[in-house]
Image (cartoon, rainbow, N blue to C red; front, side, top):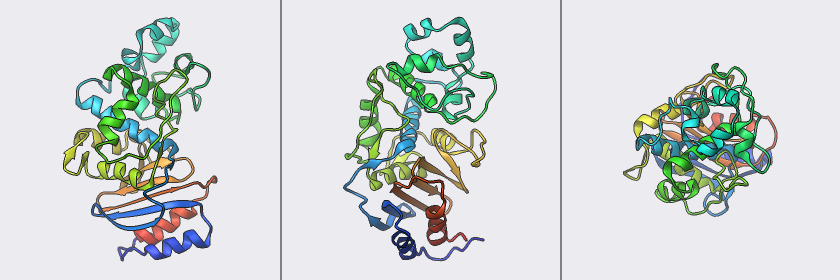
Length: 294
């Protein structure tokens, strides 16, 4: 049942406080304008975990728009040649099936959850891929890490700096941290910190088809692909490091770091929290009080 009545932000805040949910801050945007906020949204940066992946996806979009990368190409085309040459023939043959599109949509069976060791790249390239020709949803940070290494190669400069200059600075994001692997590559799958407000700016960019404050940062074509279902899963679908959510999409971190974007309704909700359980109570309260869904 859906109720289109006015947002009851007060009731949502009361639920947060009554239940002692560890929510750092919340923002609600209606038709691109900030209409409600709660907590610290501007000053303190917090871990956004896998929401970092969405920012890496934007960097893919910039490379795609410039013709630096093709989604149908094998990842091997864009990785350091000396590392590819070290792979066994059977590994190279398997990885030939792994296109950029496959890695963006987490549709590679066999990868463990995260890379390990002193060389994340060697670890990733040594992973046995189960049925490399088959598209199976398998959520793994290795997919993201490999794409990040590829981007470093195609931009021919440090990916962290590219993201700072091409994405964060245009979005007005100045309070941030990000991490690197032992070899120095921008990690991309996690390890980033932003404020609530800054994560909202990422969501607004996507809601506005790649334009922010009148400046195009990534093409409408790429945003459309990234935010639509490219690979089905039990959660309802996955784009390019972006999740399907109802008739829109969401940016997700593992301990309930969220940005829910519903462009057709003109509403967006961002919150950063740290709640280490599988409950959906915070989401249900948001849907009931902000979206009018019961």
